[in-house]
Image (tube, rainbow, N blue to C red; front, side):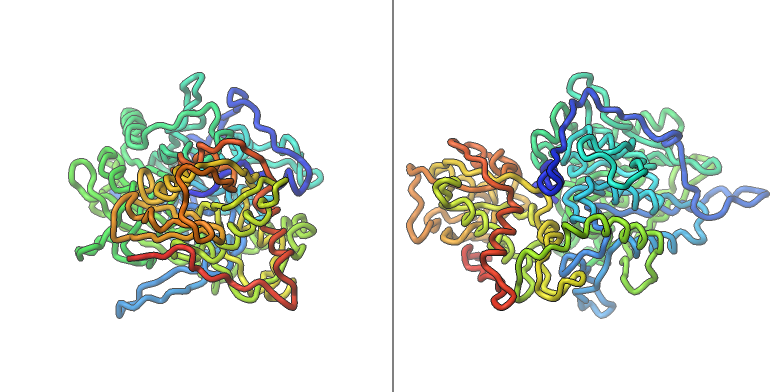
Length: 608
């Protein structure tokens, strides 16, 4: 999902080291030996004698893991399930790589032809356990999961192309070095694919555009792309020197190339997605009812991709769906997504015809499965988590404040989120003093809130205690804060851009600090959904001609997430990081005896 995908400054701040970005020209995009035609070959070999004409290939897939090695806490770790009687069971706890490993290994049993693929955002916006170590723990876990291939997502660019190359190829961090004595980071033993990302100077692909999985004469090509709009949701430093191209044109180009090479079975891994009509993971996306089905960018992308491609594994929107969308010839084609954070995996059967070397599209079957937490943990993943937790513990376990109940952020579906209010208030309070910027109002982008604050203890700290690790999980980008001058007219424009322009189809409702109030009328369309006459600051109507001091993270201040009006600020003052302000607010407003309560959500009046 769109977020505050910034260069991760956590380790710089915590470990007093800065992650420098080298030039893209210095990028080494060499792949692991043999990565171009590899297969883990899960399960047994093929028997002797006559080979049947068709063979079933199992495609296991997931997306948007975001470094969630431990089970995600609170509502962010739940999935919804539609029961046989039509009712919805809303809170099934899911996720965690100890369980994901068990689920995948169990699913592979009895399937000699099994390939595992991912739809991007494996790393980035990660909890402290992975983010503190520049996501090396997650790459190590994915190697252990026997991932065969993944597309890049927008978050793979959070720390720039050179750091992405390091995750692929290995080597210790250029500033912080090796985290474990005598151990050098090996990098990913699966290829990252970035077909639609090229270097500006040379026009050449940043990483491999595709790979071919082979086993016993069976060949399946995988093409990987991220969304063309990646530069709009990543900092300028993260995408410096890179160009991002149209998803459909790129996939069609490389599908033709694979076809010429005799690879007729093709799967596209696309870090872009849609929104199904139901949030249940097992919703029948092909239901014929009014309002059923799927909407969003992936629909038009799927309709434009050549029929040479047999299935689409998607992501980015953190939704769960298994749908068919017609290809350009009008034939149905499978499009899947497995929610996020390792809570689900998709099991797709691709029937491979040995005579044509192609997939029998009419036989493609697919379903999402819950990564339940009532199955055995994979011991190798438990050991991995324990090892990295020991390294992180001195920082992660430090208490920052106390809460009286869950304060929902990521898990809230409302336009105004309780945790969004806390974060915006923390930013306003920290930057209101004249010498800190003189902020009068603060904005927080909803995608930058990566978790809930959960009352139940995650470890030995006790219920209600917010640790540094938990605060970091909420705001893992460690964005530097900016305070800028914006006119009242620009401020109104910014609020209207929440529901218009690139955000019209999928609104991004900014979280606002106390004192700012307005009405959001969702019965209207476009910019009119923000009722201009209702926008007030501390009870007074916004004056279009007056200058206001506005606090926001540097991603928003650069016009990110489709808010060009916020990028027009002047007289910029750079303040502390968002995480520092968040922790300072928790310390100032909570004690063990008087914990912070979830705030009221009464700043935005919503008409539906």
